[in-house]
Structure formats: structure tokens, C-alpha cells
Amino acid sequence: MILSNLFFRNKAAIVKAGAVHKLLKLVNSSNGSPKQSVAEAIVANFLGLSALDSNKQIIGSSDAIPFLVETLKHFIEDISSQAKQDSLRALYNLSILPSNVVLMLETDLIPLLLSKLGDVDASEIILSILSNVVSVAEGRKAIRIVPDAFPILIDVLNWTDSPGCQEKVTYILMVIVHKSYGDRQEMIKAGIATSLLELTLLGSTLAQKRASRILECLRGEKGKEVSGWLGSGLSAPFCGPSPTHLTEELLEGEDDMLSEERKAVEQLVQQSLHDNMKRMMKRANLPQDFVASHHFKSLSSSSTSNSLPF
Image (cartoon, rainbow, N blue to C red; front, top):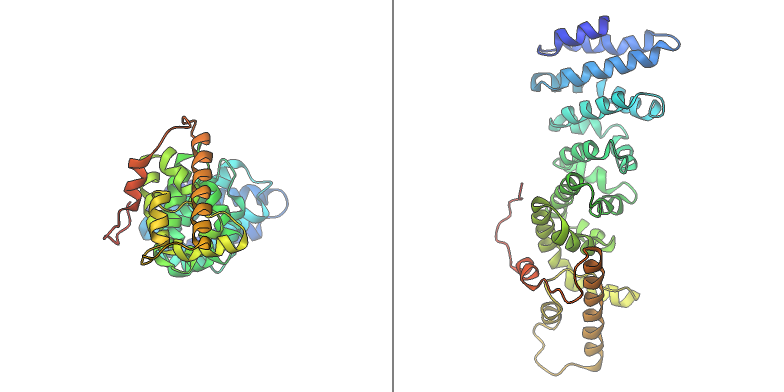
């Protein structure tokens, strides 16, 4: 009752640092079974207080962020679903402030969030937090160093029943691909091209726009990656508008007759693109003779804008 009253009194007021420390001390001072209920009540208080911009820095500079992260980690199996959501939403509110993102990186929040992607109730708010984290250079680095971070994020592109998650993950990947040139090849190796192209067919308007922008950024990596794919025996993912366009790029500047080796490369690339298109049409339930030439031509147009589509 005391914690509940404290929450409602401070919901629309600026919280003081001393009040935050007092809240956290309540967890350590409680004994036995009440500890969990006290922790859940404090999480609810932080959720309400963190909604105000004036409170974000005060709460973030205290030990509230480690407490929220530890609550997710150690009470993840025991706390109520509501408390879990409250903790994630409080972290989201705090992550809006870039300086709080830096403090979050001092914990193991990022690996924890990526490991929890797939939880139906939590995935969208997790991606919302990562959307704030990725806006900070240190945050982008923290994401990329997590093992299998790109495969985990790319998998979300295929969640056709979660358009909100698809829109958020395309934003995350779009920011990374614009800001971190070295990560483009890692994304390609993780198989992002086919998932992006499928999203341009099946995704929401916003997801389609962002997927198209990512593909434009990856086009610069396409030529040098093709030789690597062929050398390793892997089929090249479709990153361009059509087999003819890709062949012309591969052979740009070559006016003399194709050698047998170049002809074999051309044939292999075209077959790979054809197979990728068939797989996408099958998943989209499109007729086998469907040709999305007009849509894919739009992907080949060069963009002179460096701004991100929001």
C-alpha cells in the first residue's frame, strides 16, 4: 500500500535521487517471500516515474537500470507477466535518453534482450529498446559483438504474423547498415538478402520501404561477395532487380567475348536468382508465372538521399 501510494504521488512529479535509492533499499531490506512482491511494486513505480522526461536522467544515474536488468534475469521465471512487461517498458522509457543507453551497456542487457527475442509477449518491446540502443554508436557495437546477433535479428524479418516486429527490426538493421559499413558483409553472409526481398513483397508499407533501403545499401557489397559465394559453393543471394542487371554489373567494362569461365559464372548466378524467386513466390502463394519486374526495378534506382525513412 505504501509503495502504491508513493507511485501515485510521484507519477506526475519530478522524483529525487534520494527517493530512488530508498526504493531500491526496500528490496534489500525485505526478508523472505515478500521480496518478490516488493520488487514487482518497485518496478511498477519505476515504470510510472520513467515516463516523464524530467525523471529519466535521475533514475538512470541511480542503480535503477541494473536493478531492472537483474529483475529480468533472476526473477524471469517467477515474476508475474505484468511485472516482466513493466520492467521492459521502464527500460524502454529510460533508453530514450542516449546517456542512459551508455549506462545500460555496462550491464548485460543487450545479450539478454537478444536471447529473449521470440517471446510473443516481449519481442515487440524488446525491439523498441534495441531501436533506441542502435541510435548510439556504442550501442551498435554492443549489438554486433553478441554472437549470432545478425542471424537472430534477420530471423525476425520472416515473422509474417508480427508486422510490428518486422517494422522495428528493419529500422534496427537499416541504421546499422547506414552507420556501420563493415557490418554489411556480415548481414549478407547471414542470409539477409532473400528475407529482405520477401519482405518487399509481403511486408507492410513501412517495412517494404525500409527493406528496399537496406537492399540499396547492400548493392555495393554485391559484386565482391558474388565471387566469394561461388568459390565456397554457395548460391548468391538476390540483391539486385533482375538477373540481367546483375550480369551487366558483373561484366561491366568487359567488351570482349565472355570466356567459358565467365559464362559458367553467369549461368550459376542466374540459376541462383531464379531459385530464390521461386522460393519467395511459393511462400507468398503467388502463381509460378508471376513476374514482379516493375517492383524490383524500383529497387535498382539509385538513391541520392542519405536520410533514413521513418
